[in-house]
Length: 66
Image (cartoon, rainbow, N blue to C red; front, side, top):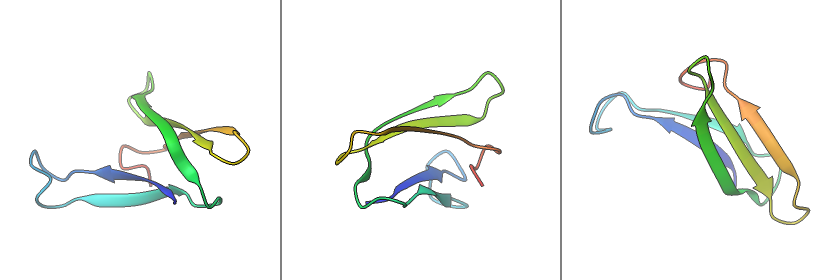
């Protein structure tokens, strides 16, 4: 299981969508996750690895997390 972020290209997510893989380093990445916007408006994702319980945080450099 990898962790990714989907950004809808329009209100109904029917066109112009982008998908970015945030982390695929573990076989069980992203089973427990949370998404928030930082003070700068960029996505911040907190997630854990189910086997070792490690907490990771990823802060996106752009709104599309690319």
